[in-house]
Image 1 (cartoon, helix red, strand yellow):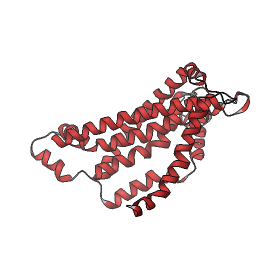
Image 2 (cartoon, rainbow, N blue to C red; image 1 turned 180 degrees about the horizontal axis):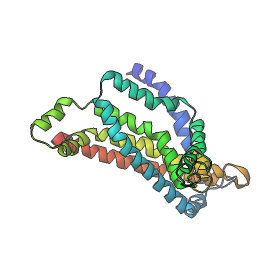
Image 3 (cartoon, one colour; image 1 turned 180 degrees about the vertical axis):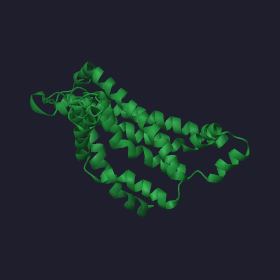
Image 4 (cartoon, rainbow, N blue to C red; image 1 turned 90 degrees about the vertical axis):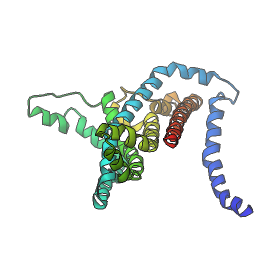
Length: 272
C-alpha cells in the first residue's frame, strides 16, 4: 500500500501544481476585483458577450459535425485495409501535424485570400474573385483542417477492434448494407465517436489563433475574447478569468453529456 502511494505521488504533485492550482487562480481572479475584494460582477458581465459565446458554440458544432462526416468513412476504410495500407494512411494523416500549427494556418490564408490559389484557378473559368478569407466559413475550414486527425484516430482505433467475422455474420443472417452499418458498425464504434467529438469540439471552442488569422476579426470566438482581456488597453484579467470559467463550464457540460451518452451505448451493447 505504501509503495503504491509512493509511486502515485509524482502524479499527484503534477496534478496539484499544473491543474488544481491554475484552476484555483482562475476561480480567484474571476470572483475578485482588481483590489482583491470578493464580487460576482465579473461573472455577471459575461452575459454581455452571449452572442460571441453562442457563435463559438455554433461554429464549433459545425466543424465537429463535418469532421465526423469526413472522418467516419475514412476511419472505416483504414480499419479494413491491409497493414501496409493502414500505415500509409496513418503517415498521410499525421504528416501535416509535424508542421507548426501557425504555419499550417498561414498556408490557408494564402490559399483563400483574394489573390490566392483558389481564386486564381476560378479566374481561368471566368468566376470570381470570391471572398473566402475573413469569413465564418474560413474559420470552420481552419478548425476542420487542424483538428480532423483528432477525430480520425479514435474512430480508427475503435473500428480496428470490430472483427470482420462480426460483419460477415450479420451479412450471412440477411442484413442489408444499411442494417450492417446502423445495427453493427455504428453501435460498436460509438466509443470512438464520443471520444472524437470531445477531442475536436473542445479545441475548436477554445481556439483563438484560427479565428484571428482566417476570420480577420469578423468572427470573434471565446478564445479571442479571453485574449483581449489580457492585452492592450482592455487589460482586465478578472473579466478574462470569468469568461474562462464560463468556457470551462461549457466544456465540462459537453463532456458530461458525451460520457452519459457513451454509458448509455455501453449498457445497450451489453443487453444485446
